[in-house]
Image 1 (tube, helix red, strand yellow):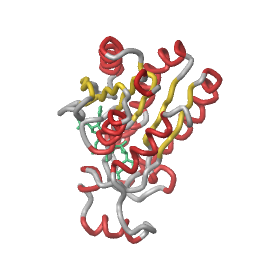
Image 2 (cartoon, rainbow, N blue to C red):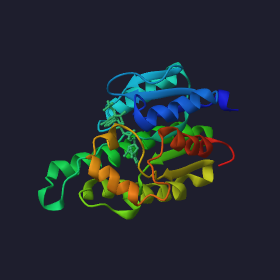
Image 3 (cartoon, rainbow, N blue to C red):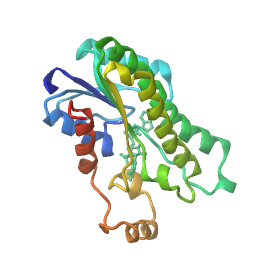
Image 4 (cartoon, helix red, strand yellow):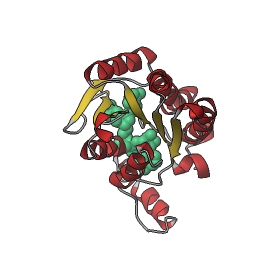
Length: 218
Ligand code: NDP
């Protein structure tokens, strides 16, 4: 079944998105990734897209549809942080993070929904974060965008759930990627103290959850 299915992962050139794309390739799906820079993993089609720009998202989908076929599984993974405390947070710090993490998911899922409705089958997977559920100092912009994805997915299932389309949010804890490598060493050590396993997780551990959510078993 997976061989007929087309997956699109946003931000698939590095980090968690890349690991997700690799896992889908290994499971035999037809895989495309969006990237602003660089390339996705071997076996995946790379298309250019900036998720803050609806025309760019539309062009990326059109290219994937023409090359691989209609997109059945979409993973909204592209995301950014601009951490700073509330009193220092500018309008742009807030707006740009929400426009990428939450607005980006909106643009991508809206574009994907047309084909899914036609097929009466679809899998929408949104990459949120533990920070969206617990909150975190210095991340009011990021936490708002990530908890917003929960309301997004719940509403989406109420609109489209009757047409064979599921929507799920994956909220990973801290994962070893460029995003966490950018945190000061003391911050990383502090986070690890509160993680029962005493370590960050790997991108591949997130990918296993995502591929399951894309399957018929989900
Ligand atoms: P990285 O910083 O390693 O990668 C981010 C990805 O998002 C890159 O591919 C980047 O593209 C892409 N991206 C950013 N902005 C845009 C944009 N405007 N348009 C298109 N693509 C964009 O992050 P991670 O792999 O760590 O994170 C992936 C997702 O997982 C994010 O949504 C993040 O919030 C979430 N997450 C991460 C956790 C962690 O601990 N790392 C924990 C929980 C959630 P480019 O290379 O071109 O910049």
